Length: 516
Image (tube, rainbow, N blue to C red; front, side, top):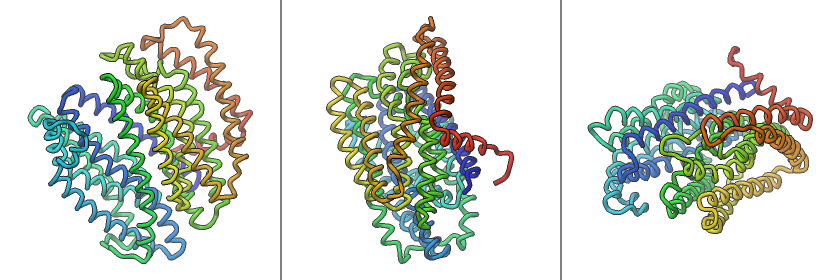
């Protein structure tokens, strides 16, 4: 895949990522407006967590393993054997999804018991989970389609599944809330999962013809080794879900509304990853995986270095902007209706720490993907275990003095620790990677960001504008972004000319005027 093709694929994924996130916000607004904050919505959120957790773990495992495994099998034993391995993996996963879905549909009370919501909400959640159970299986099939399509450089269909899922929930609520109540949202979840499968199925069928057509298989000579590789990857993904759960658990012990504030801040802090990070690395991952599969580690390391430079050029100014403008960003985004000044303050405190973590999250995700490309899942699992334990420990330390902001600070520290650990593992596995060169690259870009942030604050401090209003906060952000952006471009062009040239080349290649 060429740089032009990577850039185009990144633009497609970015577009659908933005649409999905916008629909996700609209979905939350509609759910709150129709059902409010009640026992019903508590039960809905927890039931949806069960469905989405299974789908998230499966998607992570499949996209992490299928791409490098297919590339390696094709390079070593040919395309026919590679497709046979994919069909064997799909056969076992499909059978497992059917079994798990049946268990969830028959015994939903068991899964809702873990949330300790009391008998009334547990009963409501169990009924909603029974309605959503097919969505668990369908989202699993969608995850398989996503992985197989990405193996072959098809990103548009997989990128649009979030849009389809959120659209299904909105349709279910709008059409059925008046007669079905909260159950309409559960049916909307199932409808959204159906739309995910329908969206990808035609393209999946076309791509499968290259592998001899659709077929059911359960055996392959290397299926056992793949299963062994999947164990640490699945464990790492499950551990990541543990951190999400403990954050919600600890935040729920605080005053009412603090958990929501943390959730809003987390949504804003993770937005750069959804809109910018995933679009770039989704099409780039198969390229790096192919280099490692074909024993071209020098080219793989070069692709990693160039990607790290581009990611730093994007992530560092975003980190600095969110950190210094957290209050203004929270005001512009949420400062209306029932979210008064106190609400904005509760959101902005953790948002500042989430902003600081953006740079580490970008580079850490690149390191994670690069280790996955080399089939080093055990190292990823070890790094994840250390990070999860560290995060929980820091949560307990910071929760008392900093409230929900302490949970965000714990996450930020853990992200940079995880990045350091995975970088150390990658250096051990790939001696071609120069840590000194990488540090100089990132340091030059960080210096440009610090200078830009400091200069941008000068006119911002001189502005006689009330940043406690929407207009004032927006004006403040506009001035800081404009001045800081100009200074950052000038500094980055001077301090990191090679990385700046790579970024400019990527931007030029985002044109859709020519065919692939």
